[in-house]
Amino acid sequence: MTHDQEPGSPSGAPLPEGVGRTALGVALARAVESARPDRLFDDPYASVFLRAAVAAENGPRAPRAERTDAWAAMAAHLVLRTAYFDDYLRDAVGPDGGCTQVVLLAAGLDARAFRLDWPEGVRLFELDLPEMVAFKERVLAEADAHPRVERHVLTADLREDWAAPLRAAGFAPEQPTAWLVEGLLIYLDAADAAALLDRLGALSAPGSRLALVRDGALRRTREMARRDPAMAPATRLWRGGLGRNQAQWLRAHGWLVHETDERQLCERYGADRVTDGQGFLLAVRPSPAESAERPRRAAARLLVLDPDGSVFLQLHHDAEVGPHWVLPGGGLEPGEAPLAGALRETVEETGWTDVVTGPELWRWEHDYHRPDTGLVRQHEVIFLASAPHRDPVGDLTASFAADGILTCRWFTPKELSGVPEVLWPPTLVSLLEDLRRDGPPTEPIDLGYVPNQYPGAE
Ligand SMILES: C[S@@+](CC[C@H](N)C(=O)[O-])C[C@H]1O[C@@H](n2cnc3c(N)ncnc32)[C@H](O)[C@@H]1O
Image (spheres, rainbow, N blue to C red):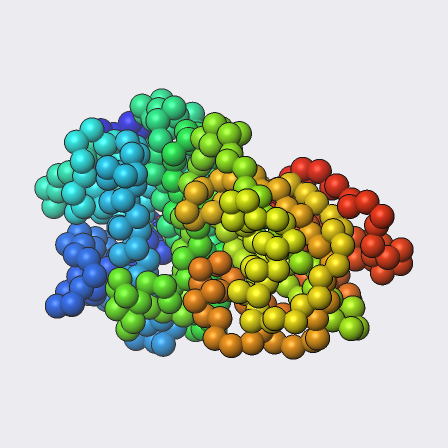
């Protein structure tokens, strides 16, 4: 380990106050987990930090809020989060990840440098407030702890410019980095959170990764915590970060964002370990070449209207666009005519065999991310169609899973104009107004290439 900045007097460093205290809560959850026979991880340093904290306060009092429901829910989340981010870091520095640097922003009492196995050549940077760093380093020194990776410790207020000290400490922005921002953004306001993520993005070479707790995560747990006076020392410091806009903000700023619902983790960690949290975000920085040289994909869709003019849409979600509503249809098979392909896909996705097709209306090009092929540019042709108003027919579970359809429904024109998610094409509302007023165009309207939009991400 090197100290790139003097972390303060190694002896007698006081217990961190204010927001630094929150790291002790995380250590408490990790210490309790580490004592379980069925533990998801073993963090022997968590109890070392806790003992030092108790000693520093001159008494045997354990951190408060230990026995309330709110704390139990929060602790369960902290444990799952720790296990998940351990796996994230192992993957990021592993052979398929290729990251050679790790940066733990607001590292708190994170002991991953000491407890995980790291490949040769990885460098790990930890940043936190001076008081926090002083306390942690004193305790680690007293415990004679040795990092298992080249470790650099920096003091920084992450609301200010931390990029310059990080570079000065040897961080190489041209190398891919695994960033971890665990338990920090909620303590920053939206402007500080955006500035931090902006700085981090500017330091991220292609192939860099970033892990965060998902926006909107823990709504119930957080509400419980807010009502629990014993949790007030932490909750009164909450500023909300980027809130629910976090994933779209990252997409708008050049990241591909994979969202993991906690329920998807049942198999990995056991269903009883999954909490009511909304999960995690794993963001990846694509290379400029990946973005520029996208394979082209041909697709065709049907604008299916019911007799009252409602439109049938399916909800999809991808790493580049996020959640978006799409007309039924999809990719064309080799040599397949667009109308035939649009109808085939629509039957597969709805079970409707009586859809009546009409003329071609619109065509457009747009970008998105496919799990199988990565970034693509899709050329899409859209035909008018009509069908009775009803739900899809039959068991379409397999078809929905294969096509990544999360749900589907009919929208009246009024409902459509209030949809918060992206529509494909984004101007669908006004295109439908024109269609209702003027009828189908004599020639298909070419909308050209339409860049992705990220409403609410500013
Ligand atoms: C809940 S703890 C999480 C610590 C660690 N990431 C973990 O999960 O174990 C929050 C941490 O954020 C740090 N922190 C909060 N505001 C900060 C700021 N403006 N600059 C640097 N660190 C900050 C605190 O000192 C504390 O260590």
